[in-house]
Image (tube, rainbow, N blue to C red; front, side, top):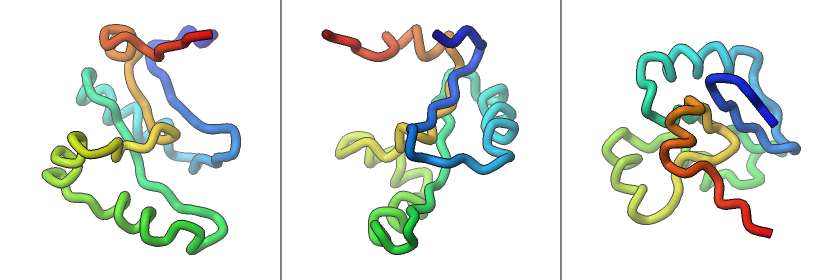
Length: 95
């Protein structure tokens, strides 16, 4: 169980860049009620070329509009304050 003020998500098969936490923490402090996300790079290159290009090039308006169609902020890139995460109910963990 984590205990920090911020939550940084990463899937078991993903790798994060060395500056990710520092960069996202700075943004989260500026926008404490937001989920901060990031870009992705699929390995091997080209494995999901269309999706990666689409996800990494959305404008702010497109990102906002896409929330009504599908999740565009990829879960493994999430960085969020614990307070905000818990305020919206966290994860639904059912057995």
